[in-house]
Structure formats: C-alpha cells, structure tokens
Amino acid sequence: NTRNQNKQKTARDERRLERDNKTVMVMAKLFCHDHHCGLQGENGLCLECSEVVNYALQRTKKLPHLHKGICEACDIQCYKPSMRKQIRAIMAYSGPRMITHHPLMAFRHIVRKLALKIKVLVDDLFDGFCL
Image (cartoon, rainbow, N blue to C red; front, side, top):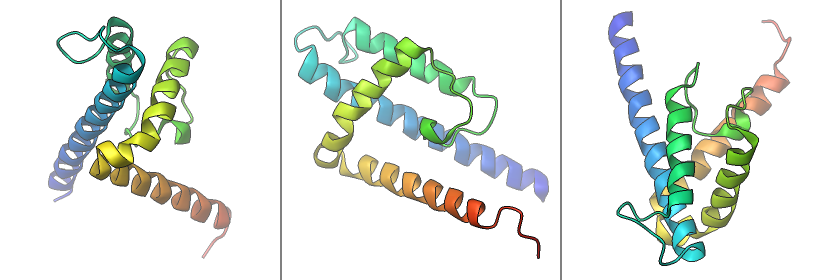
C-alpha cells in the first residue's frame, strides 16, 4: 500500500513539475513579447529568454528534493546569480499580467504560495511544542 502511495505521489509531483515548467514558459513568452518584440524564434522566445527558460527547466529537474514550485521558500538557491536575476525580472514583469492572460495559472500559483506561507507560519508557531 505504501508503494502505491509513493507512485501516486511521484505521478502527482511530475504533473506539478510539468505545470510549473509550462507556467515558466508562458511567463517568459509574455516578457519576451513585450521586451524583445520581433526577435522570437519558433518557440516564441528570443535566444536570451530561451536560455533562461532552458536553464530554469534544467534546475528543477536536478533538484535534490521535492519541487514545491516556489524558489523563494527553498533553502537551496540553485540558480547562478545572473540567471536568478533574469528569471526574477521575467516573473516580476509577467506575474501581475498572468491574472489577465492566464488566470487559472495565476490562481494556482497564488493559492500554492499562500498555502506554503500558512504552513511555514503554523510550523513556526508549533516549533518545539510537544504534545
């Protein structure tokens, strides 16, 4: 029974990772379209944005632990500083625009981020508390 639960978790985690990767791609396309208009290739991204997205996808594949989808909540910062700066710029620009361009993706991200923050608050409240 535990083996089946682990397989289900793994499948669920893979779906989450796939969805997060898709979200990164969509956010990069929004950014690239508005900042590098006319330079996009087949995938809808210019070379620079394509490199950032490919780097982000490689980083999430190589994580040593379960991907939670929100890098700021992670203890391990696995991006090179230059790539981190670029992905942050993409997300800062595209994040607010996702609500009108891709509302479901934006809603899922907001809910996940709030749930993670609530979990951290609860963990902090009960840290060291024994029943």
